[in-house]
Amino acid sequence: MFVQVFSSVAIIALVLIQRGKGADAGAGFGGGASGTVFGARGARTGLSRATAAFAAVFMLNSLALAYLGTRNQAAPRTILDQIEASEVPVVPSPDAAPVPQAPAPAEQ
Image (tube, rainbow, N blue to C red):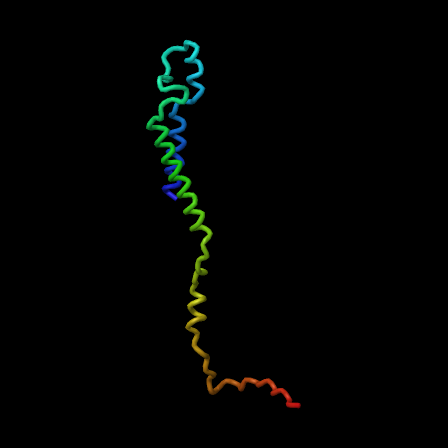
């Protein structure tokens, strides 16, 4: 979960730091210095590479968390389960009244 939160915060920060594609539109009409030296697509900066890397980590981690969350796990054990497993048969005391028995079924 820590990796998921860290990668999502990193992606958000890197996207907000990057320069938008619309920033170069005004530069084509003499708007001053621009970063269009590398053509219309622009240079692939370290920020965009880092964003792609964090996006890949985010997606792989999302798939891993989804897989781990849907696995069938054993039911949790409680103290009551342990008591039932180690239950000792109760031996009636000699002073107790006899337990009535159910009548046996009649044979035909």
